[in-house]
Image (cartoon, rainbow over all chains, first blue to last red; front, side):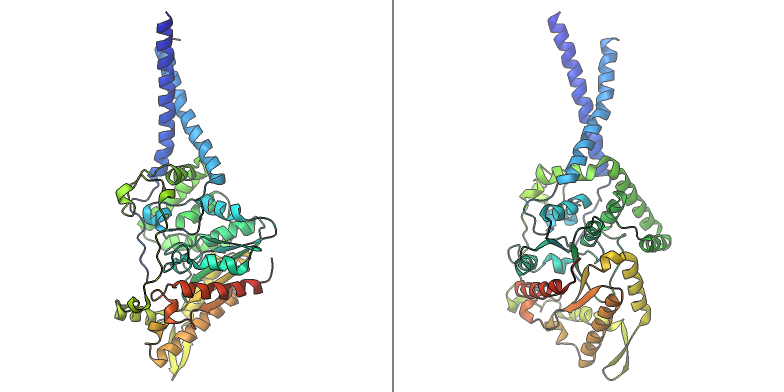
Length: 45
Length: 385
């Protein structure tokens, strides 16, 4: 009984962490989405 | 509720929670994140290596050093004021700080290839809007003003605008709208994307958070500049700017091309009306004046010292007497164009020596020292806020 409850709590914690990580990753994707593809190349003239 | 449904619910609720956590961290980072022991934006913390410091970082750099009773000297402009040709230790803005003493705080926010109205100029504007005592130093060539949007550093304008940091200046809005109307579809699309990015960032603060993480903990994008160990935190990348080469090794490379550029500084801006006598082309002075009016709000103009940079004497001494006379005429004319708009303007470099230049346009450490001494004098003469 106890081990089943522990397994269920573990699964919930895993889902929570996975969801949090995906949320943070979406935030990171916003940053990457707007990052220019090519870096600025400085040329003095 | 069944355990399967509960797991799904926890998962679905955790996604927006994770996003909200990142937004909260980003909002926090926007308030404090900035490079440590900052001296200037070297390629490791600049767009050359896909590091686009957010506007909040530039603001933080200035605000962190200021304290009541001191005047902020914000250095904008391009690679000349960024100190290409000078190592970190011999950087001219360090000398300027020494010359000015503790009453002033010098912050070098210049970027390579930036226009006089970009980056540092926008930070000066936001600080003036907050009511802080600020003097903006920037530099350019005669007839070069440009626009705050459209270039590499245009993102800073959109970010500053989206975060409501700028002084209301309808002339700038009108000028940019007119420019965008006549721009190519790809340029218009690029500007629209930058606006979208800035608007989203004002809500979600992703630029501040991920640039802070990239600076402090590790960068996630490969770039040519950082190729061998691109993941390194950017705070471990040193400023590798070097001092000018020995005098004997300077200037001779691509002499013809450099002389052509030196001549072009004034060739298209004035016409001859007799021996060593010149008349300025008025369309260019008119356009320059309009852009100064549009890109610099009056409150910023009143707090700006604009420098017009002369080319190295090695090249100017090779011009014909007529070309040199035209050069002098054009520099004096454009100094007056800036002054007519309420900007203190000086040409610099006319009495510098070969030793003072690292190449045609950038200063060596000795030139940097001279520039610092000159500017310190100009700044002290500047009327207090």
